[in-house]
Length: 526
Ligand code: NG6
Ligand code: CA
Image 1 (cartoon, rainbow, N blue to C red):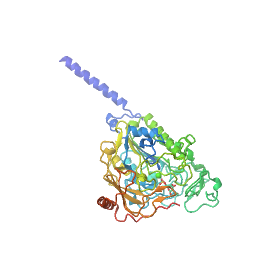
Image 2: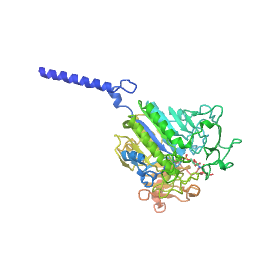
Image 3: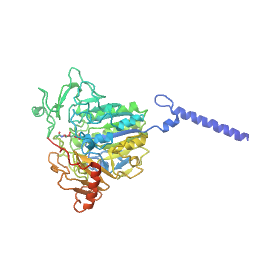
Image 4: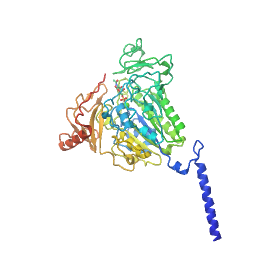
């Protein structure tokens, strides 16, 4: 009896010691004691790594043999590699709009490739992924390419620029406004142009040049990278751009340092925000034009600057992953990797992308590319990675980047208003293979329907092959119907031989998209 009592006392003391030990070991980085409950239920960090114009065939984990991307492959090998994941669109602005709002971009008539002076496309009243996370106590940030418009009309680049990312849910933003080939060629830190000298104010105009300012047309001797189409306005760092800009000399970015610069910002963000849950949207600029690898990477791929910047992006991702690891947050971070739209070789500059391509196939087995309604426009490399939580594998489930909003909401227990985003959390974590039943994809305002293994493209005016960019667009006077399971390259149009399927697809498409799907403005390449 006595012995038993002693044993009980011993057990009790022993438990007390364990409890005290646990409480001590659960001090957070600020030195505050957290209960064990708080530690185990800490919400996961969420990171979206989003590339610009990276194609389905550009990574060795997606079958590339001429370009080796070990760091992205590590995400793929340690995570879930999706074969049938889509951006909502074959161009940047609409894809990013859908990613952040969960809405089909064709519901917003202004969701098209935006100039650098366009007003903010997302309403400040609208639900967004970062807003939703903020309500759940997340710290939120974007580092990199924005391209969703800024301000409400006329922007004064010399004052705080607003509304912008900070007004639609990001606590912190460090961005380039539009694209690397568009002015203004400056970084914007929480609405303020970085490094601006008030005595040299910035002015930006997309219609008229400023008097006395050189342009690529009038001063071809100043140009280091030759333009092929478009891109013949202001010259910055020897690179001709889209749009005119005056002033802001001390604020102009260095193109070759851009990748390092954004990487450093992303790493610093992790280091400074690792204690509480965070959402980081790391929107890298590669391999969009102008392709400007750092000298460390120039010539590395043997494929010209396009290949070089893909290797550079891969390196950045490796460095970024190391930071997550050394800062001790890797195990509690869900990483989603993807690209905003398909690949293009000549997007307006002579940069050897075609000449040095060799056997590389940026679209992999897919037809078309950026701007195209064929698969390569929107089917993307897409990887989910969560160390210890997602079992490595391959998923053939049909998913769209737009689905991240509802899925992430589910993950963090947030309430969301219904959008076009579908909650597919268990698919993204590899616990289910039941993806979407159907998806409307968009390319330069034209739309098509993917449903199960089928893809239907309705007739659209315009030429099918755009010579300037060398891409098949998916325009035709005829309906097109493909069975992607047997014909991933879209070589066999089954519209005539399977009219029942065509009708079924068309009915489904019209139900979602409406009857007026052909009332669109065609893409104009200057
Ligand atoms: C096009 C540009 C192209 C690229 C694209 C936007 C011309 C002729 N072409 O208008 O170079 O900037 O817009 O790409 O100007 S995206 O990935 O941001 O959608
Ligand atoms: Ca893009």
